[in-house]
Length: 505
Ligand code: MCA
Ligand code: AMP
Image 1: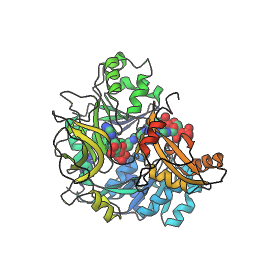
Image 2: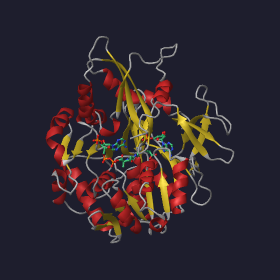
Image 3: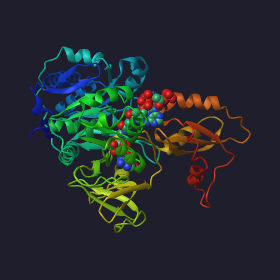
Image 4: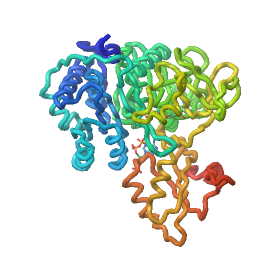
């Protein structure tokens, strides 16, 4: 094989006229058309001097063209760096510079604002709009519809995905061709995807869930996707009859359950509903079954590892658990202090090893050594337990992390930002249960002594510099933060105190 990922996911579909993407406007794009456009895009990259190993940072709306850019990158051996559309200029600056991106593709509407950033980083700036417009699309239009696939080995990088960390500094997870391909193979098999499947795709495509789990599974099985720009309840309800499967974060399923039109008739024809990225409450699992007769299949993964465990397709899908390690994936639960493996039934940190586990953090050898052991085990930071039947339970987090609507938010990053604002002495950021997002963000601020903290200025700074999903939805003022004798902020006390803050929202 010359380029394992392209050869497995895309090459078999060249010239295939069957549907690949059903779009919200009613149009359908065949595999053949999609791949011709992707080849044009690959030629466009090449004409810009972008070649194997170069990073292409992408900050664009979800569209077929954005997905073509993914295919083009794989074909041209280029490393894709997708970025959350909610990121602000300040946040983007770090990713583009840290990755040394050679090309930065942004939305057409952002070109003027991001020009200075791109020039400062040395990246070429091109645009791609949601309707297939933009300077990259224009360049691609004039290119040939064929492109000689660039040879790659399975250990070459296919993608760089940034994930924030407990230190507040985001880390680029290096994902190889093998990481992505091995995971797609295992998922197609485990979840029994075939070319008859039509996946309802309402996830964003800048994260592993929507881009790799969902899209790669469909590409490998040769099925089709109903490719919606985002999760819009009306659109999802109206397209559901044409789908066989759906993947989503728990918020998708709680929103569906809130609508009486989502009933057993609407879901009867469906083969499978899959949930991940955040804990699915056992209660949601039960309500879903009571309403539709379907047991949601919950699985567990991470940006660094793609998918690690899954409830069984055949067999009991156990509510409140994430199932069994996927074939080829080793999971063990270890003592957080000693690293010794713990017996079933005991709670510790989940370690994972397998072909799915990433190659390390971009330009961070020390961080990589801390979390990715020489024997191949990656320390996830998730507090877990394996029960007597072998089901893995994620029972908490050893890392300070909030997951809101499936997006990860690292409190440290927000705290560093808040601490830097005038009048703020210190801050603590916590998550509290939220009926729609699962968890949402509360910031506790301690004003400088004698300062008259201007909260409207704090809100304005947050709005300007932090992506919307990270923004604290409530700010509380305290004179001092609760600390233990070691001086560590007692976040548990804060979580208890503000546990019901979002209950009436
Ligand atoms: C949007 N907003 C949010 C979120 N999303 N606030 C908190 N948490 C969120 N997740 C805010 C916006 O900033 C905006 O705020 C307001 O909500 C409305 O924005 P809109 O885009 O209309 O929101 P939405 O359509 O309601 O989006 C909610 C959503 C979306 C559908 C749950 O967040 C989503 O698609 N989440 C999926 C995340 C995902 O794919 N995660 C996978 C990570 P304002 O009004 O103030 O401007 S990959 C991963 O975790 C691993 C590998 C795994 O296991 O899968
Ligand atoms: P990310 O860094 O965005 O890849 O998020 C990965 C984290 O999401 C994991 O380390 C878990 O904490 C969490 N996660 C993903 N899937 C699940 C799940 N099914 N149940 C509980 N937590 C999950």
